[in-house]
Amino acid sequence: MSTSNAAPPPADRVFLITGASTGIGAATARHAAAAGWRLVLAARSKERLDALAEELGGRERALAVQCDVTSWEDQQRMAAAALETFGGIDVAFANAGFGGPRGFLNDTPEHWREMVLTNVYGAALTIRATVPALKSSRGHLLLTSSVAGRRALPGSFYSCTKFAVTAMGEAARQDLNDTGVRVTLIEPGMTDTPFFDNRPSNALEDDDIARAVIYAVSQPPHVDVNEILIRPTAQSG
Ligand SMILES: NC(=O)c1ccc[n+]([C@@H]2O[C@H](COP(=O)([O-])OP(=O)(O)OC[C@H]3O[C@@H](n4cnc5c(N)ncnc54)[C@H](OP(=O)(O)O)[C@@H]3O)[C@@H](O)[C@H]2O)c1
Image (cartoon, rainbow, N blue to C red; front, side):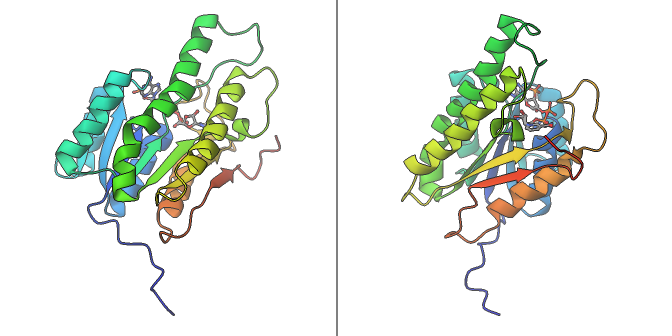
């Protein structure tokens, strides 16, 4: 069997993740580290990030950067820290986000505002902060949308933000066409993470989503996996 199409080995390439402190982001960091990537771990919870960076090999292998994705200054600092420490960015995974109660009368306007700033504006800022480095590395951009970004859920403002992320992935893909940068939308169904105050049963595990991310970034350079939508076998909606 020919191996000429094999993706280059990830040894020492640099994988940046926002929302890396828990859930899908932290699981992806663990899988990527096991596959040989160096990590840039970004979120607001510095202690959690520091502990994860230590677990994944310490400063040589994983850099923890405190970053509120709603802040352009923080995002610029995050990208600059990656370049200064590791010399480049090969994968940027814009994954930070959160949800809220369904029903247009059941959440506060302030919480909606934070959700837009984090899920939509924050993801766009991550693209803006990392695309110059991704163009240099002919790298890979991934965004965490959701099944809720593909079909509207009743009364879900969160769903509206994730539709925006889905559009952002396609807009970025077309914008980056011919630059060598690949773009993948990750669209999880219900996944058992701290996203939920009451943790769900019959849900996906964070590792299930992490494996999908690793699949996308492990393809040969001419293959762009544009979307991966994953439901738990038991999820109908
Ligand atoms: N769980 C599901 O069923 C599900 C399904 C579809 C899509 N998703 C999406 O998957 C992504 C990850 O969620 P998860 O399920 O892994 O939940 P999670 O465990 O709650 O992780 C959310 C991550 O986002 C970070 N974050 C939140 N606000 C931030 C901000 N302003 N700046 C920087 N980081 C921020 C959190 O870290 P800090 O609090 O430390 O900042 C945390 O690391 C989200 O985009 C979510 O919408 C989840």
